[in-house]
Length: 444
Ligand code: SUG
Image (tube, rainbow, N blue to C red; front, side, top):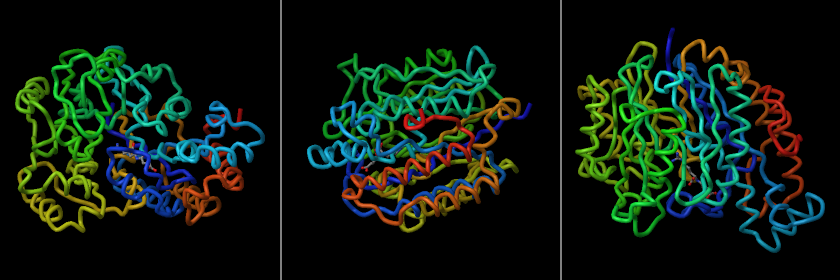
């Protein structure tokens, strides 16, 4: 059986906008109220995903969520017609309207944590949607995320879907952005590296002072139990609180792994030596630790260019490639580092740059836009085939974006009842294109 890693990229939704909703995410905060371009955002994401498919990688698409989320606004007491609800929210609580209109589900790395069948005790692929409870606008995603994942991975012989963890600070969970699976080969059991920002029940551990830690040790441990992993194939490592305070709100802003390569900044982890030794022992076999020093690239440059929010992928010929945002190419120190990296003795042989600036301006790079699911060919055959990106789906989705998306959106536009109609029309058509069934509340 052939085993590989598939990427499922979040399709940017039609309400993509800059609302400054993520305290601790410097790009989100610094672009608050800037006009956005939803059409360009969706196309940038699709182009990146299609380029990976064209490289011979298995690539799928994760549908966006229903926004503006009138149901949540009603739950919060706004009444009347849908247009009344939007107008009342805009007048009485504009911040809540922004929360309910965010297209943040595009960052698929936060959709869920996924463990492949070669790692789990029951030999099934496990999914746990992230509760995203640290940010209000993201805390309204998990239910629909679960519906979408179940519509894509519906075969219970192969796929197990868990409930999101309880939405309490003790179990704050941000999904795969804080989880990396390392392995010698995709068809061999790997070690799952869970990275947490703080431990809710251990007050002796250091904590960030300025910005929130979004992932707890308790959440990561619960997911490892749910996914039927054990001590031999898990490592729990704390993020360095000092980097959270410099804008590293998820670990995938400062570290990324693929197979037996871990690419990370020297300041990424707390107690790094001990924990990386544990990883080395559990992984068995070669482990390439590609550590970048502060002298080579400062944490500030890492945060502004997303050097570590790159994807490392294994190409069909076995070489690894880095999928980087063009922001890395534009920063001389980071570009010089990446040029040098290709000359070093690591499995990484290529760098490809993609313009995903519409997403970057909200703090989401190439790696944030994708959810990885390592699978074998039997499992892949059980995935809803209409979500897999080929020439046909790419052409259809581009035409769909052209037909339904606006060129420009500001926070003021979010109350426009016409926008709601446009979004629902678009999403209804999308569920038909991707044969997802009635995943959205407005369809039920
Ligand atoms: O949760 N930004 C997202 C970015 C998520 C990036 N994901 C990963 N690192 N995996 C967040 O902070 C900004 C929305 C706004 O401000 O309009 C936002 O939600």
